[in-house]
Amino acid sequence: MRAITTRAALGLLIAAGTLTASPAAATPTDPQTRRVLDQAVTAGGIPGILAEIRQGGRRWLHTAGVADTETGRKRQAGHRFRIGSATKAFVATVMLQLVAEGKMDLADPVDKWLPGLVRGNGHDGAAISVRQLLNHTSGIFDYLQDQEAVNRHPAPTPRQLVEVAMAHPPALQPGQGWQYSQTNYALVGMIIERATGGTLTDEISKRITRPLGLTGTYLPRGADTKIRGPHSRHYSKLHLPEPNAKIYDLTELNPSPFWAAGGMISTVGDLNRFFGALLSGRLLPPKVQREMFTTVPTKDWVPNAAYGLGVSSVKLSCGRTVWGMGGAIFGSWSYAYGSREGRHLVAINVNADWAGGPWKDPIGIFTDVLEVEYC
Image 1 (cartoon, one colour):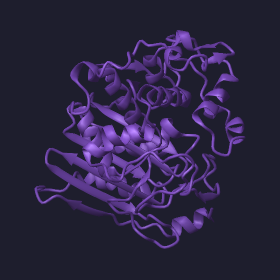
Image 2 (cartoon, rainbow, N blue to C red; image 1 turned 45 degrees about the horizontal axis):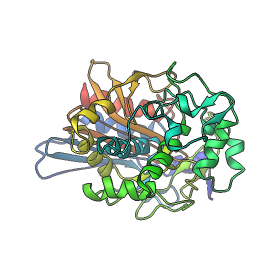
Image 3 (tube, helix red, strand yellow; image 1 turned 135 degrees about the vertical axis):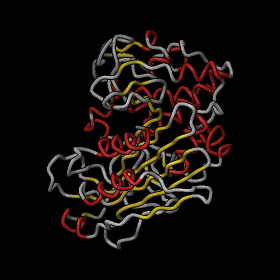
Image 4 (spheres, rainbow, N blue to C red; image 1 turned 120 degrees about the vertical axis):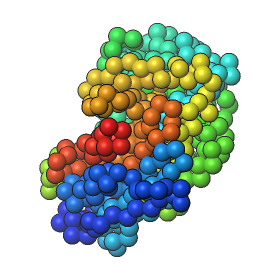
């Protein structure tokens, strides 16, 4: 692991961005979008940003800053990055395909698939449904809230992650509110593996990434710390709020604690292709897709957001609503949202887990881009 200082990182930032468009594009994307992306580097102090915007048959790419603060290497369209909780949209899609195939029901209790696992300190797997896992209304404790217990396992298994959660009381009773919990998706991943007899990695590949040609997208197996293929470095302040907090290179990261909740790797192009297919109805039949996009109110999460089954909606200042999912993991924040029919899509990644200047975190940058693109 390499450590670099904030001063060194800022000294290597490149203010000028690059824009490419498909031959079908008569004009470039909104200059205000480019301005926000460039300012994320010059004013926000992040190493680099990468965005792809699709509208109809047009496609634009914009990059600013660098992929590597030591070499000054620029970010490229095909760069892969860790997508954090955007993983949940892929996992939920697999689960809903199983529902559509009649292999399970959203009303199934967790105990039907994982008998006796969700027990202890007030948790009861017989009283929690698959739907409540998917939309975070289960109340199950989030294992990442006990980082010390998670870290006792060099490469924690999904069962061990759930056991960490079971050592704590639930955040709320099932169906009595909303609480974001990574444990929900560890359980969803385990149920998928139980129902299919395959691995979650293989099911995502077989059902989503191979059919859609998402060549830069995959869920790593086990404790594989590498990012396969071209990628930027991932820089982290370990979520410390101090402006001068030390910066670490966490490109090589053990994804075991994140798995079905946030362990996937992708590209901006692949994220747009995935969400374009999902929003336009190419991955799920209409009845099941309606279930995915039926939302519940959120609490202490993304501003103006509601949560469905692995996806979320964000209402913008002009009244328009966009759909997709975002994700944060050490050294990488991503957003992928689109219009409900999937014709106008935006995917963005910053290779850092902080933002300064006018933004308190990367969500502010992403929201500003969405406001320009859709309002």
